[in-house]
Amino acid sequence: MRGNSLIELLEKWNAIWRSYMMYKETMGFVKGIGAGIVASVAVAAVGSQMMKNNRHLRRDAHRAMHAVGNAMQNVEHMFKA
Image (tube, rainbow, N blue to C red; front, side, top):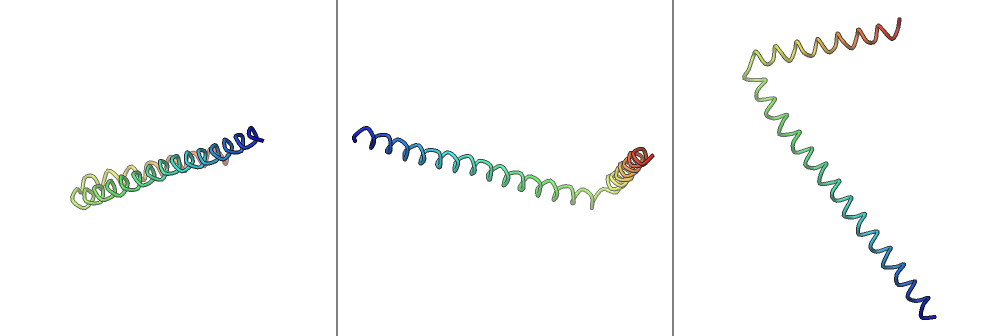
């Protein structure tokens, strides 16, 4: 009987430990997502400010968008043919 209660106690301890470890892993994941969101907002704010103040940067970004769009159209055309 005593051995049975020891096994039950170990099973409960194991369940508690697994729950705790899942909590820790989940919190690390959530913190990583939060840090990514903060970094992306900072980059967007800096990029927005740069785009407002720098005409040359806006022109280069516009050209790059068109180049990527043309490349995508070319790839799409190759797959259709």
